[in-house]
Length: 55
Image (cartoon, rainbow, N blue to C red; front, side, top):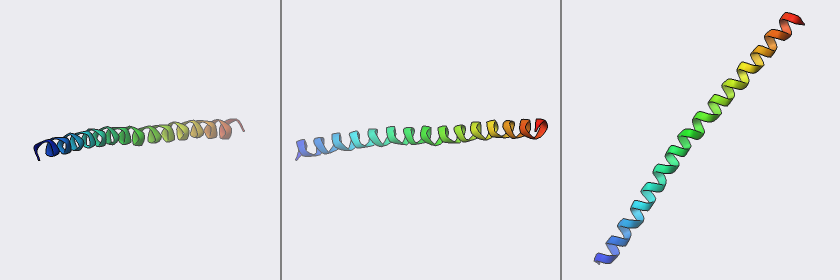
C-alpha cells in the first residue's frame, strides 16, 4: 500500500511538472506569433506607405 501510494505520488508530481512546462511553453508560443504578426504588419505597412508615396 505504502509503496503504491509513493509511486503514485511520484507519477503525479512528474505529470504536474510536465504540465507546468507545457503551460510555460504554450505561453511562449502564444507570445511569439503575436510578435511575428506585429512585425510582418509593421513591415507591410511601411512597404505600402513607400509604395503610395513614391508610386
